[in-house]
Image 1 (cartoon, rainbow, N blue to C red):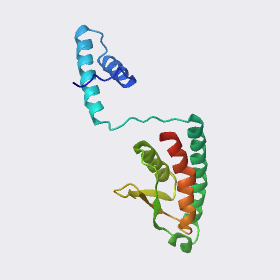
Image 2 (cartoon, rainbow, N blue to C red; image 1 turned 180 degrees about the vertical axis):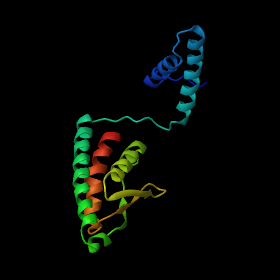
Image 3 (cartoon, helix red, strand yellow; image 1 turned 90 degrees about the vertical axis):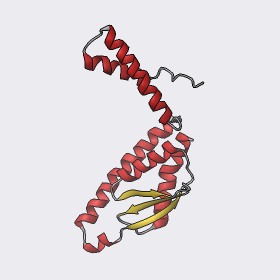
Length: 162
């Protein structure tokens, strides 16, 4: 027998939104809201493969500041490329980076970081999850990019999510 989903913040918020949208505390709306909330909670619980259990808040805060700094510096670098000579724009390309992280939420966060940083975009992850493909606007030193992704992003994410 399957166990009932726990009363989570999602369930409470969904029920509260139902009542607010209907602007009523009538018994019928309460029963209908509870039925809808339980149905949606059961349906979404079945879709979740695993729960995120992030840890190490200080590492996460430090990573946030690293990402914000990298985004700022990357914006400046991309502006220089765009407004610079045509020769500076001819260094783009795809590259592969070996990845050790397997946590799905960590990989999703890494995808967001890489894509949010101007000049880079997540292009794919190998089916075995061991190789990340990215596109870099200014690809001059592949080893530097490997070190950046692994040391600045992957290592802290592994500490947070694994």
